Length: 145
Image (cartoon, rainbow, N blue to C red; front, side, top):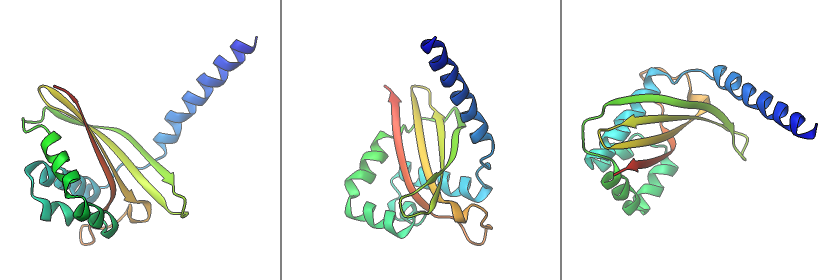
């Protein structure tokens, strides 16, 4: 009986996860443009342009830890992309009571799969093209050969 209750609770909680994500807005055109401009600049090793897409705190981190930028650059495949898919979008509450809008993309290459996670300040979610959003945080993971 307890096992059935646990299974039912698990199923209900997982069903609720999809509904929560459905209520999260799609990334704006400006956010997508900034996210993939930063990705391309990093892939090509254009660090000054890459840094221009980041919030000041993240800029400072990468300026002080340039080896991390270079590590990302060497890890990102140089092949032609086969596809880009939006996998996850969510809003997370931070310790300082601000919210982050987090988006995860899956980028397919012939021999690799890249998971590209990027976060923006949730308050900037609806900026116009004149006021481009800045990336608050990012992570890149490469799977495959």
